[in-house]
Structure formats: structure tokens, C-alpha cells
Image (cartoon, rainbow, N blue to C red; front, side):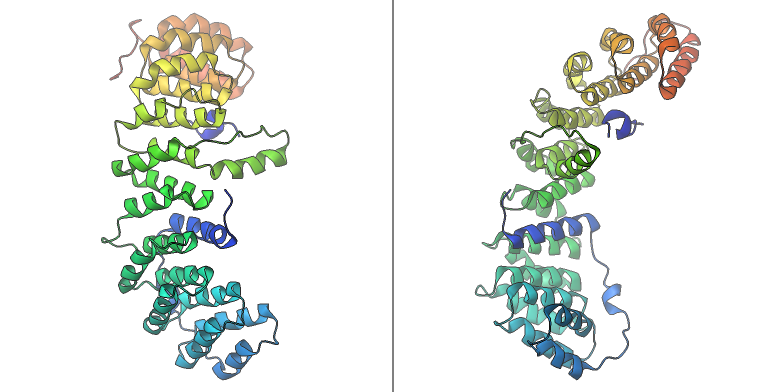
Length: 400
């Protein structure tokens, strides 16, 4: 099945700082997948560990300089380097945010066993700052040791949302047959205390997995209220809005449902086909088209003519084409004749051609001289040639 690009079909929560940071970090981890260990095992040139250790523990030094030192020490194979880092992470006079940076640096250490033991203690210490515990979880995932899964699994149910997110993301980074990615991603998606970017990223990944077990979590997320989104009036505003839309959980859930091999997904999506927000209707019809949801044909017949958003009308036409909905030929002919958007006209003429609608030949011939967009003209010319060669005026069936 070939879909037109989104250029043709689409047109161009309050959380703590720790949760917001680990939301962005987890989103990157979720998209990247398992982290290769080879990068942490690269041979590094020898460094003067004692001199660097003295710099790290010298609190009169600028914080940024000490962070750079910590990152160098973290990659050293010398056990003394770890002693300096462990001391710095446990130093309560240093800010929790800086100690968290040190803890994340340990994820690149070649001394994985010693580091893992220390990070286990930091993660399990309920008196430790959440941002440090979350950083410990992230580094446990980066170390790539299977033995870390048990402590991370426990931490995935922690009372602190940043710790939960970091632990779940670390489990995804570790991967393996004993990590149920659908369950972990579903837990991130269902956790309303997590940042939207992490939850939307989890929904997207659930769609990529194409596992019907994700359907309940995605359906629940689809029911969340979508805020009113102002229409951008400038190019800069449009770019900003694109970033905002990527973080909208219901939109990500709708598109993910369109990727699942779940026959029930179409019915769930149809409940939102008349949503007041055009962005939701757009995501819904895009998903329905990808599912070839025949139960959505009546809604698409109405939307292809009546929806006030041209992107929704485009995807409604795609759905009618993909389902070979011959009962929608009258609506597609009207769209070809009357729709002001060239993308809708493009999808309409392609749908008419796909369904061998010879009755549309006079309409296409009449529309061709008036069409200004080169791509649409080419599609019309192709349809004229194709339909003229059809021996019967019987429209193509849904199996053709």
C-alpha cells in the first residue's frame, strides 16, 4: 500500500525540573533503543587521576570545570578515579543537580561492576535527592549489565515520577527477551505524572512495535482531553506549533493505533472522528486510512466534503481510496469538482482512478484545463489514460 506523504495529506503539564529533564532524556532513550556497550569500553589515554581527583574535590573550582573533570575520570580504568567520583557524588555540600551530572557520567565507565554496585546504593537510598537517584537509574541502563534489571524493575514503581521514568527508560535501554517493551512503554504512557514528551514518545514507540497488546493503553490515552491549539499566523509560529503537536499525547496515541494490527482500533478511533479540534480529527483519519478501516467509510464520506480543515479532507479521501469505497464515488466526484484545496483534488482523482470510475472521465476532462498545480494535472492526465483503457464502466471492487 502506498500513501502520499504527509506534505500532501497534512500540510506543513506542570512537572518538576527533574521530571522535565528526565522526560526529555527518556524520550531520547525510548527512540534510540538499546545502548551499545562498546562505546563505554573504548581504550582511553592515561590521565593523571590524582591531579584530576584533587580538582574534582576542590569546591573553590568552578562547577563547569569540575563537571568536565568528572567526565574524564568516569572513563578512566583506574579504580582511584572511581573513589574520587563516589566521594563527590556523596558530598552533600554539592548541589543535587551537579551530583546527578556526576552520576550520569558513570554510565560510560569501563569499571562496570564497581560502578553498578555504587549506583544500586544511590538508587535504593530513599534519602538521596530524586534527581541523583534518577541519574543513577539512567547510568545503570547505560552500563548494559543484565543484573541491573531487578533493581531497575523495583525502581520503576518508585514514588517519585522522575525516578520511575528513568528506571523504565533504563530497562528499555537494556532490552533483552526478559524486558516486555509493550508493558514498560505502556506504563510510561499511562503515568499521568510524566512529561508529555515522554508519554507521547512512548505512544509512538508502541505504534512502531505493532503489538495489539498496546491497544488498551493507547485507547485510554486517546480519551485524554486535547487542549485548544491556536492556529499559527507566522512561519515561526508554525514551527513552534509543530513542536507542541509532537508532545500531544492523544495525537500520538491516535497515530499509534493506526499502526497496530488490531481490528478493534478502528472503532475506538471513530469515536473521535468529529472531535472539535482539527488536529485530533486529522490524526484520527490518518490512522483510519492506514488501517483501511471500512467501518469508517460513512464518516469519511461526510468529512471529505464537509470538514473545514483541508488536511482532514485529504486523509478522508485517502481512506476512501484505500478501502475502495465505491459507494463514495459521488462524494469523490464532487470533491474533484469543487474542493478549493489541490491536495484534496489530487487524492480524489487518484481514488476515482483506483476504483475504475469511468463515469468520472467527463469531470476529469473538464477539470484538467482549470487545474494549476502541476502534480494534480499529471494525476488527472494519468487517470484519463488509465480510465479510458478500462473495458467496462463497472467500478473496481474492494478486492481489486
